[in-house]
Length: 400
Image (cartoon, rainbow, N blue to C red):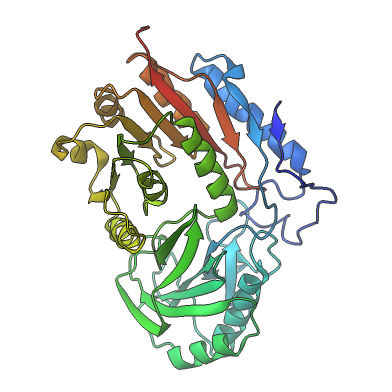
């Protein structure tokens, strides 16, 4: 079986997206869903075949539980559609770094996001605020980040500006509070960023209303997610993936687990409900602080976290693992870190990947250390995009 669909779910009658022709966000908009799955499955199998695997090692691809309105975070950019045009707030135009389009018709976010996006754009144009110019590095408006607790109905709005001018914080807050939204505003923040990079690097953040985090629930646990903390973008799909992945680990009870590249520790805490001890490692300090706070709030005393690069952190952990879980970035696991991970000789290594290509490369290297996987399952957690998640359990054998 190649395509695995959630029970009682169909995807008949694909809705058109008005922005599909120009928006750079969703490369598969307008493509029938089953064809999206075919393309993702074929691409992943090609990546594994290129690394010397039988492509049939990929057992199939599981369709998303929710095709529309699944994204719980969007990072919008202020700019213009053409040079000298009016200031817009939206996403980058397809194949264009400088041009921004209005995407307030987006189908993969909750309607509240589109309403806040459109209203913020009007608010800023009416006041004549200039958007930040990536070439001259002048201008005020940079980004708007919206985040949503899917299970809690809480919203965070984070406006990002340079320090090149004043912004009407009180008016912005009043405008947001006047909107008729299905979700509730948990917090509104104004963050300042003067970095030359296009990335949002908050240098100073002021809380305009509420709190600087929102609440979410996943795998039966409560999580506080900070304004800039990483959290899974598609909560329903992530919960299914994590549940399936944990079910692959035989007898986690009473075992010590390393959770490497653990982010805010979602899967760490789920494992800690049964494992003897879980040690999470994550390089982003804010994510580690959130993981510690969430573990404490969930009453998990057997779950600890280290803020460090994986390669360096492993040298300082005295207790050896029985199980290792890795969930690396798209670039995969660095070869030196991978060799150090495999050198522990743990019987089970659970590999969760957001890039099947680099996963295949890492698994090819793992074969030299006698690790094998019977199969790899793909997960379409981000429909309309080219991104695919993958899960495999690598078991240590005596075969080289």
